[in-house]
Image (cartoon, rainbow, N blue to C red):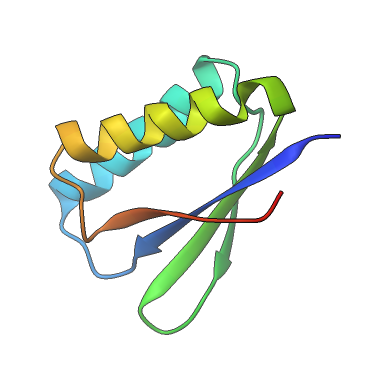
Length: 85
């Protein structure tokens, strides 16, 4: 059964940060973690981006996301949301 990974993304961002986030999403797809990323409104300040991945890739995908956030100074703009699955 696939596992869901959720990302909380700040709504009000500048163009440079938007490009970094798009690059992250593209990397998740090209690395084979997912085929599609769903975007929903979480509240007036954040979007919730979610995707499903296989159980054996979940930890690898989460580690990739956390490294990307750290390496591209995106803390406070995008965050991995813990889920129980």
